[in-house]
Figure 1 (cartoon, rainbow, N blue to C red):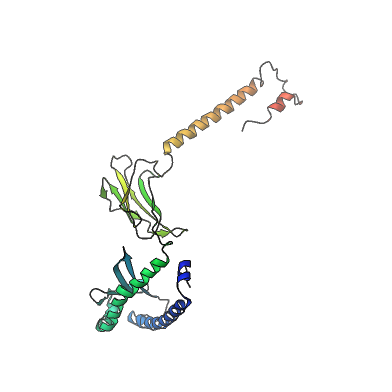
Figure 2: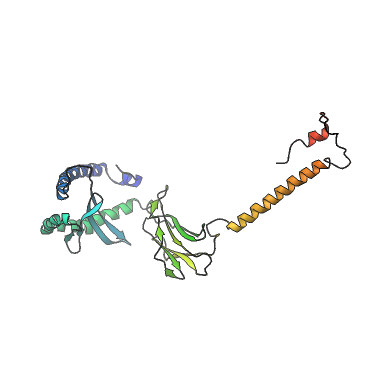
Length: 289
């Protein structure tokens, strides 16, 4: 099922039928593989997963890489090194598979050709189909320290996903940063936040450097104080609150003083104990907001 309109508009219906049949055939193959792997790991039951991921990368009109990886229960099982034409087994359970596949040179040639030729050709077609939708979008970058001791760099609204965000102190890259990981926005763009602990009273210069395909050169934002992207400084907020409270207190005090003196010049208040509400009491029946 096409998830993007530009794919639906440019690829004929037969393509999806062929891909469906391929996926159904792969499902049967992986059911057999599942039983084999459960035996390798001495498992007789439970819920397990087999995953396959393969693809290629195109940058500036040329191929820069291709990959094929299998995983079992979320862990790497085997991967193809297309340059050396061998399979890499990170676990002992995958060595048998590696030795078998390494001997099948025709199978390895097939995957190398797919990753370096066929995959790239299709990727170029897809990029052409979705040219408008896939055009690079510049990130919006904010460098702030809302908590004073923690500096945070947020890059958001960018496309495509690949991006480099670095926090620097006096021009040197900080290695102890924390990353949120790249996550999608609702509009199809992406965001990434990186943070680091800082000394708010120190004189070091902090900055955030961003590299993205939408930028011709790296973009750098320099941290200039707590107000950068973090709202008004806390001290200003406290002062404003105190001033407002003083104004309110003065207004209340003035009101009670006004009541005590009778409300207006020349007025003689009614004697205590009188149950009659005169016009002056009506005028002052509602306290100020």
